[in-house]
Length: 258
Image 1: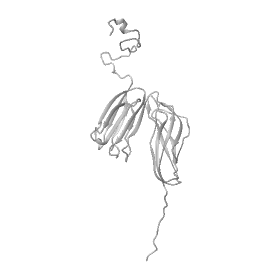
Image 2: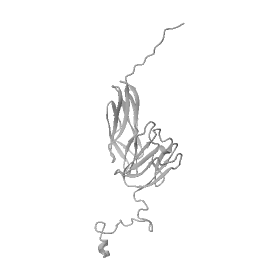
Image 3: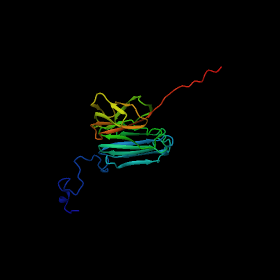
Image 4: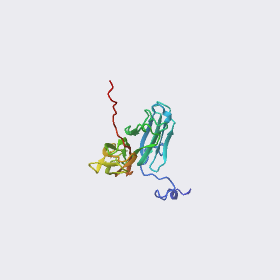
């Protein structure tokens, strides 16, 4: 270090050997520099149902770094089983969740609240029959377009079905309003349409897009609805799936006996 305080202090952030903050940065004299949070103060709470030991989750930040994790760390039927206090900068954060047995979180759920106790995100985990990782996105002062996956199950060839996919802006904060500009799809035999685009969607609000499945070949089909919007994560995609069945139905009647 420099023994001359004037040289050591410098004139600003670029030439100082000290940590330089803006004036009026601190209002907690006698406290610690990182208290209070100068980003966005959030609290993550996980509540378990039955079979809490099957629950696995972790959260990643905008750079892909892991903020916290739990791999079978909770007991069953705990309110709250786990609490994480977060100080987050602006960006897109992802909660990854799975159930080790594949039979949902059995009543388990999570909530994310802001400094005033308002719920800004919540969820109940993956669907039944899946041990894959599922993602749940949260935009901090940025918009994020999230849609629920659609599975049409089996459908007779050349028949069709249309469902409304809800698209939710899972961002929060003053800068989280986004505009949904367009929708498209990759993968046959699916199609997608939406009216009223571009559509401005406030934080926590939703709109819907129409997704149609019209199989012409047997077997499994998979596609992705692509959501192009003004948020930092654009374009976002949501999986759709189904399988075509070449089926003929008939009734057979025996001759009348009697």
